[in-house]
Amino acid sequence: MQRKFRLKKRAAFAYVYKKGEKSAVQDMILLAARSREGLKIGLSVSKKVGNAVTRNRVKRLLREGLVPLTDRLDRGYMYVIVAKPSLAKKNYFEVRDELGRLFSKAGKLNGEGDLS
Image 1 (spheres, rainbow, N blue to C red):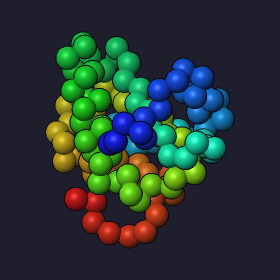
Image 2: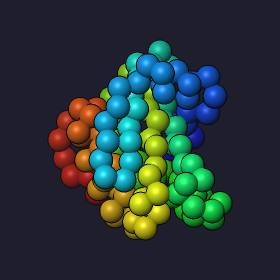
Image 3: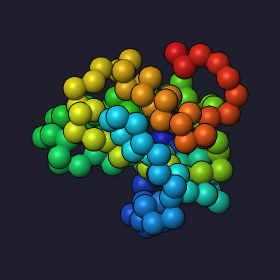
Image 4: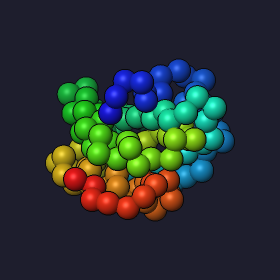
């Protein structure tokens, strides 16, 4: 995921948590709220997921899993992806597929095509 798409500010996270619509799959939750700034994606990985090394690994997996999806995401939204503890046991391919299912379930993917 490119840096320009990262959601960074606390106020932006709070806005998405408050106004966002939720969708969930087994290992993560997606919150999506309308955005005036264009596509922004934030990651939320709490201490419940594991120690610092595990949390950073999960964030890296999520960022890499988003790379093939970024072109197909609805650009008018800010997204926050909340990782559940079970996500720490997944590999890259499982995370990428689960992200595809999550955005698809939320109806935020444009176009068709392969996720790989």
